Image 1 (tube, protein in one colour):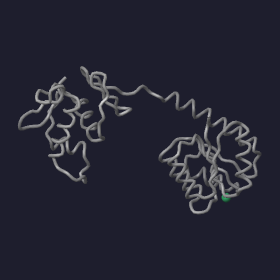
Image 2 (tube, helix red, strand yellow; image 1 turned 135 degrees about the vertical axis):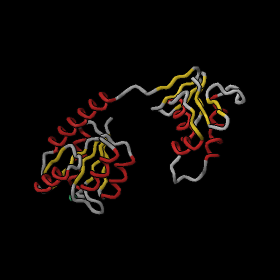
Image 3 (cartoon, rainbow, N blue to C red; image 1 turned 60 degrees about the vertical axis):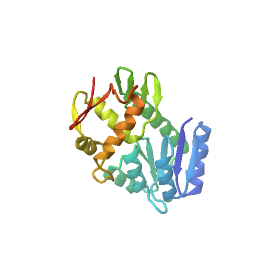
Image 4 (cartoon, rainbow, N blue to C red; image 1 turned 90 degrees about the horizontal axis):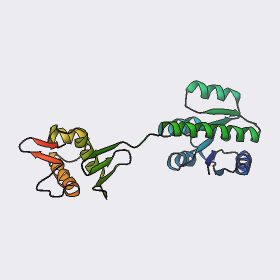
Length: 229
Ligand code: CA
């Protein structure tokens, strides 16, 4: 069932929109304030947002801008003033549709359905297969960020995963610890190249049958590491 968030400070309008949408089978939540509305838009899995322009705390322009930075779900903006619609268009905030109050609730429902259908087509057409790296018994799913060794899944921390994936994507290439530290850790991060050594050790414990005779990540003495293929 599609979940819709209505961010609207005029209760009667919010309730009217909700009632019509619920009759059409949608699950609807209402927020009256801009701050909570923005927070929920960013953190909860809504499929569409109906966004009033003039709101207490944070206005619809700002909410639209921030949501668009993170999500591409449809946003329908509503306003009491025709001028505002032109302003929204002019700002290029990325709203999918605009409606001027008062509008007929059935028109709103029709537009919600059209935008959800279009969005679903878009999502389906851009959905790609996961990117997988497979080397002997090692399987790395880059999309899901999961690792299996001989069919058994192993838990990896973020940095361990990044380091293993980077090496596996650049096989037969020797990287110094400095190279790897720069590649995987931000310059601001606490730590030094010893961090690399510690992470290589932990990765080996997970993927190698014998850590003393690694078959994947080879130590090149005095230089660094190489992923064998
Ligand atoms: Ca308002």
